[in-house]
Amino acid sequence: MGYFTKERETAPCTVTISHRFEELSAHVRFDNGTTINPGDEVLVQGPEIMAPFGEMVVEKRTAIITRASKLEQLWTRATGDFEFMELCEFSFSEEALS
Image 1 (cartoon, helix red, strand yellow):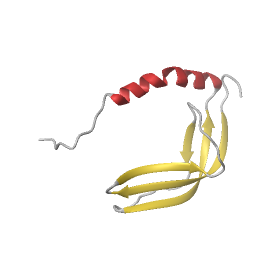
Image 2 (spheres, rainbow, N blue to C red):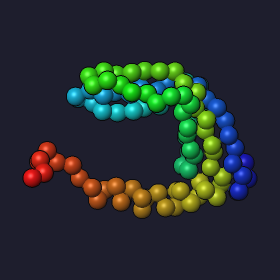
Image 3 (cartoon, rainbow, N blue to C red):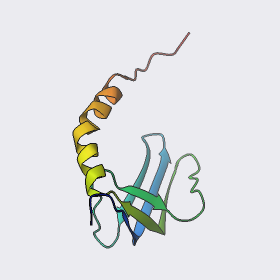
Image 4 (cartoon, rainbow, N blue to C red):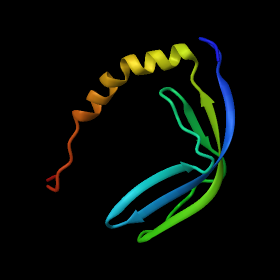
């Protein structure tokens, strides 16, 4: 992989969507052990998955992974901490807005 080139690969994956009172989440696990690096992009193929309230849905899919170039990886590692700090500015509370 070069400093400016991107590579694409496909990987089988398991998508888990939870829409329950105790958990609202979406997870993708690569079934072949593939790992994601800083700057990589993942696109899961197939129609949107909707889990009805109170349920958890698990589906097998295929993901297309676009690997970041070496330059993009370096940039993401260098600036990632700043983007994380932007997320830290938000908080959640149980108070209702009036």
